Image 1: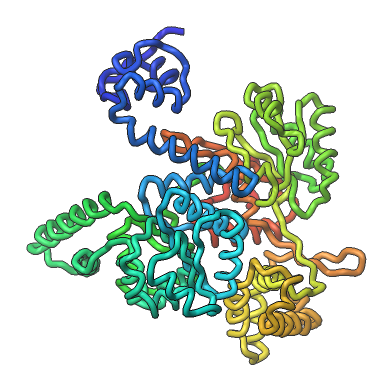
Image 2: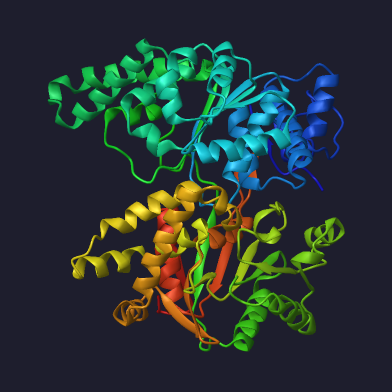
Length: 582
């Protein structure tokens, strides 16, 4: 194959001329590496270093090396590979970029945080994990002690004197506390030189301007920088009301402060990672994160998917017809497809899908057969389709990173979650049910002149204990008592025929009866985002483009999915294919 194009000043290592073949194979020009051969990024970095020619690519090579070590560490400590999303978060940390994590419960945010803290502890750098409750502090301490033999100190209210002595003297590698502890003991923490601060309680952090200042100070942000950032925020607020004759002067001031803050940010070698907030206070202090660290709490820091989300409304919603439509689409669009069934379908349906596709001449396997050997066959196009479940728990939806091969996804039905209305006292199940019926329940209580604010209060309470299994509730009598109270409250509501009628009449909730039991069916937004995201992965040059084709089998579930997806990401817009419906 001959050369097609030459690019001036484009070699990523020396900025000299490079041709398209060199870019495709070894990534650098002939002056950097003379021999034309296909090399991985790691191999290119190694050869450049050996030849003493590593220049502009040094930062990229260092990042690649750090990520390799982190992935190896993650596998050793957890026994499974990190998800692509978790690896992306790690890349930001190694680039010394602070950011806000926008992710639904269950996608590995906390696991990522504690593994990353343990990784830095192995490299003799301190980390600080800030959590909502003392119960979570205890749980995270136990998990960390299984991950690392480094010193983990957690303030749980037990052995106060001993624990405080260790904290004040800096006798720890990883510190775990609540935000209240930081507020009360900041003077003894400000000189501790934390490399990595992970805040999984950003709502409490944002309640107090002083807390924001304290966290920024732990990163090495001094009062002068904070004041300059506040001045910048004030100038930006005044900008729309500035008189024309003064406009240029104000713009010059803004530009000058922005440049100064950008220089400060580039030198900062400590990282803050915060979880997404449920509500964002409108105080200027919250904007300090944007102006000083370059991210906004509660806003997506960068796009992590580049997917066309397409709805297809088939004439018939029976399984057999959906399968025939999937066959038609695969024969039209070709290899590189992941086929997902909804989590509410039985697992046996996967084998049915695999058999159907193979019988129709489409080479297909289930996610359980998708080992290294079959992944290679999938990359080569010898296997056309892999079938899995549209759930963040399914390996096909969460752990596969093949940007060069996965072109599109087909969903056999809208991804759904099913909740039994037969109540338990599991905090996570109560939380999910309350969240699913929050809107109609609040309206129902308002109409009955009852305390509708109790719904929000219960949700806010339960979200602090989502990781607490039902079988461990006996250890925490107060929490168990509260869960029983919430369960009783829901039980009374769900016995009300008038409320069940409201649920049945809604366009975004589907009530289903099976074997005498009632189930609530709603769209599974986190499962959809995770599964469809397999088609768009991060490359050195950006994100690959993918397509997600949803064969709609239930309008109510679709309406629910649309609403819940919007809650997680404003950037997902569903388009309609082959029909005016939607």
